[in-house]
Image (cartoon, rainbow, N blue to C red):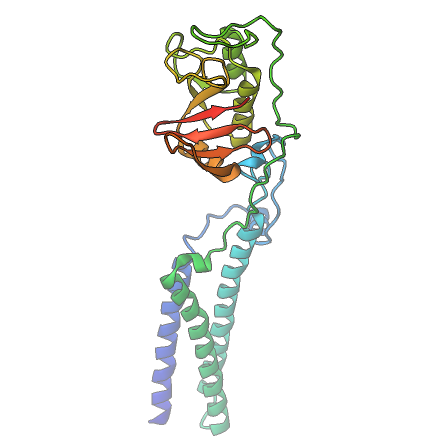
Length: 312
């Protein structure tokens, strides 16, 4: 009677194991198709990826994505995930082996109480180990799947200082080659319309409209260089929506004299300015929040539908 009860326990534990084993295989995803011996070895030994494969080292990309030039950047946590799942499968396989050993000892005990006790101990230990191993995995997965999935650990991007490779020099403008807009009181040393537009176009900056809606005649070289430098560092979309055309507020360092530009809002641009430039508080008059590029002195004011930038 006792032996019959032990056999029932043995069969019950085997059914429990099959259930957990199925769960692990399911959690690990579909089994990969056979790709040859070399492919499997490369996959499970965590062979490193060629970091320079099909990619060059593009300066500036690192300011927005530190690993953009390194195709091997995911190797470490991919390898950790492979080893973690492999360890679970290996531990389960070892436990199954000992369950089989315990079953064999029990079936061959032939009434020997010492062998029966030994088989029971092995069986209980193996089942306990499987419950802890697989139960912990399933519990963590139920609480938060991210707890069993290692992610990339990437350091924050480092902004190059103003003397780095991406400090775009202002275009050379000879005195008298540009003119200010009607009503302006500038010195006439600004950029010509087509010169400014070509400078922006060559550096990936868009302008929302042609004159007279948006004009760049008389734009000062420093503010032009500021916007190009912003584009290079941010790596985001930059669209000029206001320049030296009439209709802006007057002032020595205003739009009409070429010291100011307006940029359209977009999430990436907004986040970059707020994260990298110093918050110097609201502007008097309209309370537009201001951020200063301490390297150049340029001030970015966040108005209702655009950025208002001034650089002397």
